[in-house]
Image (cartoon, rainbow, N blue to C red):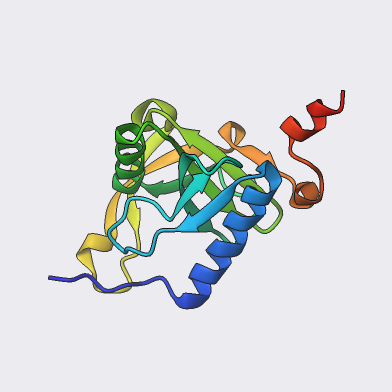
Length: 161
């Protein structure tokens, strides 16, 4: 049975903008993975065109640190990490918030999460939408300044020193 798709085209566009902002900040290129069953939203390449990371991108209408931690589907994070490991790439969670965009490299879902819970939405009548969640501490995320995209990435700055 095919599960309903909950992400709207507008949400995909917002994810695209968030991902592009982070890619610009680091001098990377991104390509959206247009497969609802894929373990990631974007494949990230460096300036030479080599794939380096897989990104899962989420936008939330909250501020950095507004809640005790950030939670996301455990299976989604484990699938992202598994695919990245098999391809010898980094797995990165990118979060667009009201005040910051931030990233977290995932290298050990169970070891990095500060706790687990059962969560998701129960207002859609989809029993599969309630599932185990992993929580990550805000302090483990790296903030990407909104204006950083207008400056050269760090590797470019060091060329001139």
